[in-house]
Image (cartoon, rainbow, N blue to C red):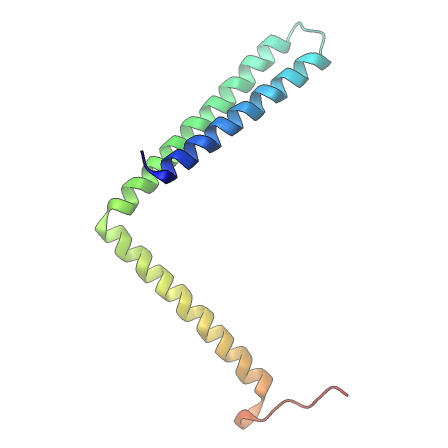
Length: 107
């Protein structure tokens, strides 16, 4: 099993544990009549979150294995790097002022 899959499984397990604790605390504060039903619903929600996370992990895994998707991701990160560089250059130009002059000191 891959490291990322183990990590996502851990996320699902942790959210399951939190959901069970939440249901337990809720049960302590209620009259007990509908607490079991609420706990059951909370467990269903947590289970569905785990299922959705599992599907998301599988989709990420499939995407990482897809050569075209990897190429798209590489291009996306290259575009992000170019955009960041361009923004930094633009900011530096504004700070330097026209013809590379240093900006006036505020004092």
